[in-house]
Image (cartoon, helix red, strand yellow):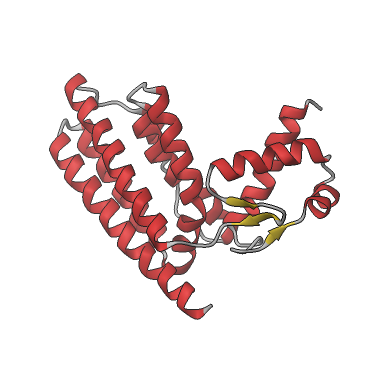
Length: 215
């Protein structure tokens, strides 16, 4: 297999374990152990580490190694603030162009999850809803930004969906935003997006605060 393909496999394996909590915040990622467990050689594994560090999921400490990044309330707030700017910009762009049909975004809607495996799948599609919204701008830089933000946010969303059942609310909010866009009610879509992001941020910071207090 090409090293690029093996690297992608390593990224997905490690990312999934971080998101689902199999690799816990602060845990050291031992290269030799992962190489053996995943049956992946070290060069693609090191490249996977580089990508995951860029996406904010792991942290390299000089002379100590790679660690899963700790959970951070401030990080959550910073991500949501930046997301708000990007996603409102996307809705404004749709309004200017009078775009109402968004098939790529509509495909991110799915039935509600009922198991941890489904929750993992749903958090990916839930975040992809917002990625596709920004992608509609056709701005490569902004698309890269939202992808990085969502990779960072993914484990937080999984925690939120697992602890509070927020998946149902997210599903409903996304449907409403799509419906507003289809009807040309762009101002309502912006208002609902703002409410959705604000509520999600508050709920998530509350959940993570409780987790950190129990440590």
